[in-house]
Image (tube, rainbow, N blue to C red):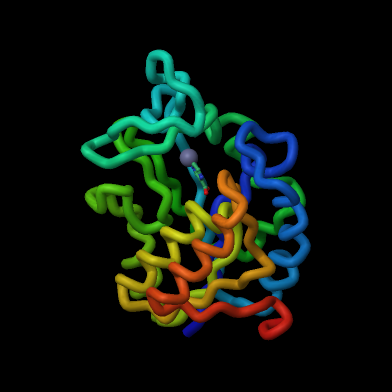
Length: 204
Ligand code: VGL
Ligand code: ZN
């Protein structure tokens, strides 16, 4: 069976948010249309405590875009974003949530970041998404949302390593693009790992 995974379509990643993805709001109507074609839909939600180690403000003399070591992993620092129970962490009001089977929150451990909807970046913490999909007979997953070069990419890669057939819906995702070619680089990385790159028109 097929499942749709909607990654982090939250106010802080949308125009006006603290970690806004340029034109991120343009994918919302596409995602809503896609949802009509799926019976099985889940979402992920970046859900950080205030003291999260990925926030530049939680490190002395560090700015967003600089690096630290977090649990032995190189960590790029971000502006404060998606703090639990804030407007910024909420899903965009226009995003249809009616058919969602579950929401998988991530990034709660202050000591490690969690880009993927499946596991923390150190692969220790497990959100339960893989088991939930498998328990529901889902073998093929279609991924959309934000951001293509971070949370979408790592969700795609972990989905592949968990044995799912993974499709990336290219026009239903946008990149942070700290470097201008990050979108294309991430796309090539996902394709090389075995993801099928598709377009909403092929599904709608
Ligand atoms: C994300 C950076 C930090 C994302 C989350 O959803 O892509 N990016 N936290
Ligand atoms: Zn985050």
